Image (tube, rainbow, N blue to C red; front, side):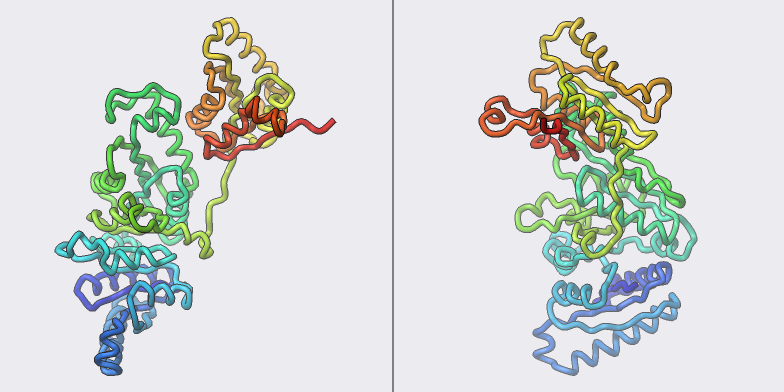
Length: 433
């Protein structure tokens, strides 16, 4: 395995090189010490510039080898750092790039600078080093590394979480999952009462979000890793709140995923602002990392929601829900009554749900079964919110399989749920007669 450390021969980059060398030893990797010569310097000074940089890099490589005991290879590149380094990532199959953070006096905290441009161009995890002593202590095996990973239901979070899991192969970790949420938005998504202010978090809302965060962090609950979630309401830019939370938790490294947003979309980029604002080291993990061969955590089905309107397709969806849920998992059976349904109608519907629980599930069966009857005229909306509230891994929906005019006129609850929810869904049709 190869990792790279960039240097401009400043004190900060020398310290980042020391950190990279110790990390390379910990990961049993080779270290490439890289400096990029701008094209105008090469055109002006020619081979003299190359020779001067080669000598300086060799001296620094020898120093780092003596410090860490790991092999360090000096590499001189030509051109803009982000482009030259991106090509090196592919050529040498780099797994990590390390850089010093921009100096505090850098205008706009490095926005648009070399570090920012490299982060936008690289397709592998990018570590910006600040407060290197904690990382170095972990690399020497002296203490666990305290890590915060930004948690939400997104692909960038998944790749960041998977990278942290890979990192745990090299030493113990104490992981804090930082979840910043907008109260009114989450209350609406979960179908709960809207709060009066952005800090008014009901017990029901907090419990639902904690349940969701625990499920998202579950893949990190492995030997050598301690995990807990920290949830905080916020308003405005997520990165500001996440960095503040990381500082409160005194973490050594903040890990965030990135989509490599461009242009105006970068105004809300959590990874970009975290790199600029954090007082600790930051690792940004691009979604493209998963396409570069990094191991990804396969999805696991533990909780399934099945909805039925007591027709044959709905009941068939119930059967599939039990078949798809592994032993020890939870099956939520849901029926939606009209908003004006009487208490007697709700009770009768619950009895109908009870009748649809397979006999094998009675008396401590292989699954935990939850029965729920909800009221609402927007059936698809009620189902979608319930799926979020229960934090299910899969939704099973029965469908009559209507096409053409019948589908357009009557609509399809299953189709609406699939359009409005980003949770995986299975639609179950009746066999053809």
